[in-house]
Length: 240
Image (cartoon, rainbow, N blue to C red):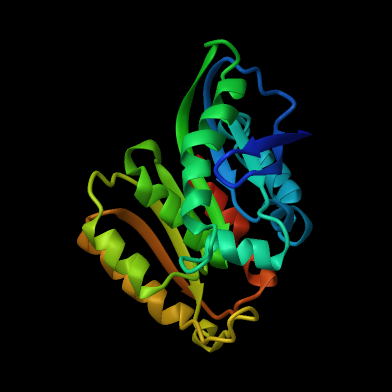
């Protein structure tokens, strides 16, 4: 596999973001490619060991996994992350606008390589608040996305309400949460986030919209060890 480093300027936020593209050495930029946008990208590399999981995925599903391209973006430090990923953050709306209007079109223009390839599946992967922003990005432009992979998404009741009002949803969703996650307290706001309860509400909202959702509760807490262990299952949901 190969991983390349890139930088993009966001006029919406007046700052530069770095991102990485991870793909198979056998990827030809011809035919169809499946693109997975990974929020908290540096954490998925350092804590989620996504490179190792991708290598295992290619051994298990060599044909479809070579079509897969990861685009890993990171929001910055913990406060920059909160302001970009949380609905109450000062950068929340502008980050969504950046992702939908600037980042995705720019990345895919480069990936498609003068029209010799096309996008098959287009998905979002995120843990905790990165799951929350992934859901919000998709709800803002629902027709663009085919898959959502949500690991312990730190959603609020406002996300659940917005999803209930969202139209033109035709997603395949993988949603997992730990049964001990209602106890998690935000290190930024010191609020208890009730992540298990909110994910149950979110699952009900997906079901009411007749979204194709795979929902799994596991005997886990709000930790990277959980999401790392679960990552293969999430990625299989995308490629298979």
